[in-house]
Image (tube, rainbow, N blue to C red; front, side, top):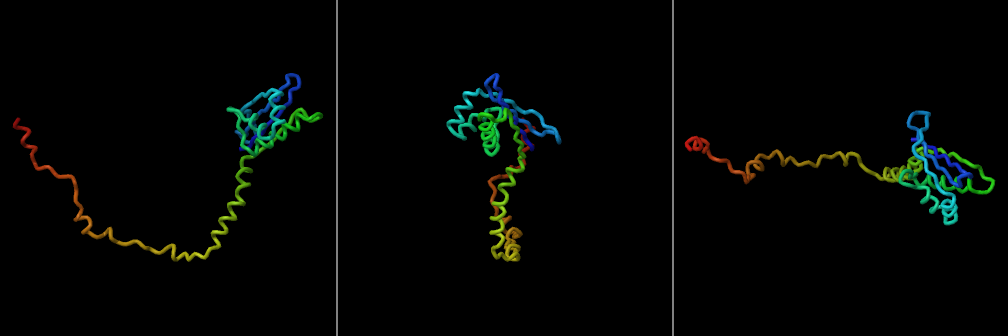
Amino acid sequence: MKQKYAIIRDDEQNTLILREYAELDKEMMSLLCEETYSREVIDGALKTGPQAMINVIRTNNMYPPTAFAQAIAEAVAGILTEGGNPSAELFFDDKDLFLKELPEESEEVEDEADEDVDVDDLLEDDIEDDFEDEKVINTLKSSIKLAEDDNDDTDDV
């Protein structure tokens, strides 16, 4: 899913607005969530560090993945610098998160494939045909006992 985050500095209200959009239909972004943060909270988080900024950005309604949250935190820092743009837009595609992990995994698979394995050994049948032996079935003892034909006695009562 493609996502867009719009960050807007509102100097009149002394706030920062963060809007999350997602591509629910092709080529059309829909607003999912809007959060407003006080400038004091954002400035305090920026002084503490990037992780504090990410913690402030994340809420119950908006919880971007770490890779997205780091980019948003950097953009917020750029917006709040003197002479910085009053707004920024960040575009993300969830496929990028998965594609970054694939090269590492594919190298591991190649290492395992390099081992000498005889395919015929994997396909050998080591199944014993004991299940066809009738003696096994005949020697089974059951805890269930069949009742004798006493059904005719109930009519006499």
